[in-house]
Image 1 (cartoon, rainbow, N blue to C red):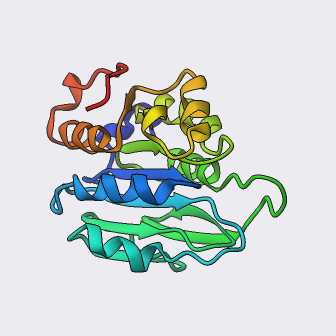
Image 2 (cartoon, rainbow, N blue to C red):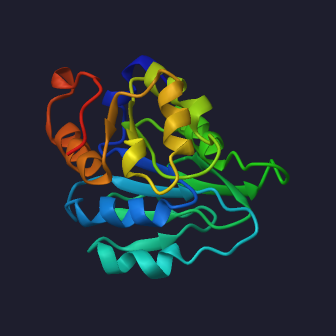
Length: 209
């Protein structure tokens, strides 16, 4: 795969990875309420759980007209869908499908967001957009520079709008965040990014909407 051309890759829709943890539900609902149902992206919510079963696939359909699915092995990646990582699994992509593996870090803070973002940079030929929202610790931060190296776009929730600011603060500290916005602002910015020509997309830090 030619990483320098990832934004012009074979897939004609982007993956938007939304990584979060504690307080993430507030951010996820605010994001989904402001995404058009026909935006043409696959939204993947990577909530870094280890043992606790997720209920996001039951809760989030109240906030979006897009189908919401709990990811299963070899599930096809499709646009205009919201996909949810299951508990106790690392998430990867291969051959345009989701792949699940046993969690590689069973102790300490999970790194499932980092694992998934790194898999995307290696195995996804479409556009990449990484979003880090409310949560403890800094999962995802270590993979953000890699997203930018392959031409992707990175966004972090503005810390003062997050229930728990640790995760977005760690993302911002990586030095590889293009936009710092509220959840509503993130949704609006992603909509603009998807609709505007790639040549017009320049990373910068914005004020919250």
